[in-house]
Length: 261
Image 1 (tube, rainbow, N blue to C red):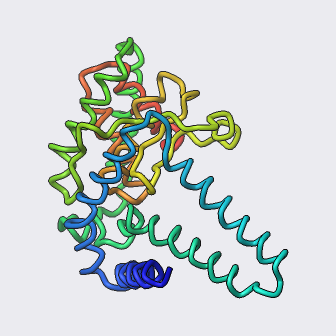
Image 2 (cartoon, rainbow, N blue to C red):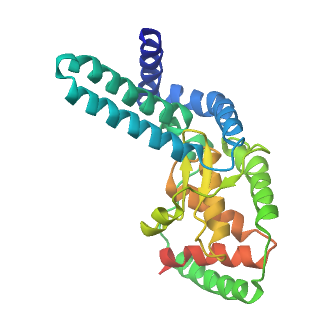
């Protein structure tokens, strides 16, 4: 118990260091995350269902059990409180060591020397014209696609193209999973999510065929180490826009429509 607590506190200190020290966060993202994500996702690939959801359920159930025990055994409440805090410690550490420390790394703009461009009305209107034309053209060319081959092409894209910007190449055993309790995720309008405890990408099975390419590419961006939602959507749109499959291009342009409006 003491050894586990000491190890947990050591990892907690490293997570806090990543939060307040850019070099530590960059070291995690560039050196540690590729190994950690590969190892955790390899364990997760052994089972077809989401180990992340199972882990969250187990952590919450254990925490609630310790609280109930603390209430029942008031004479030894400090012992149960310590065990509850230990569960919270490892839930926090596992989340950030598994994936969460990517939040704190140097941003894409600074990391790659990209300069932000100020608003230009002429350029923006030209974008709107081009976007409308591309969206209409893609809607006419849209057809069918195979999800399995599409996933492999997405993984190739992230491994060969996106990894050049400081992100992690995806592994052959990393596949998109369908979430457990899918109806619950649909009820709260969650189309997909990144499972940090076993580095699993999830896409809601109720997602429409036209939306699937963008949502899948978005979640794989998170698996590659992209933490920001806006940037993950950018990489997903960039992939869809450049696809040779009409349905994928259409899904990408259509996903951008609410932002354009």
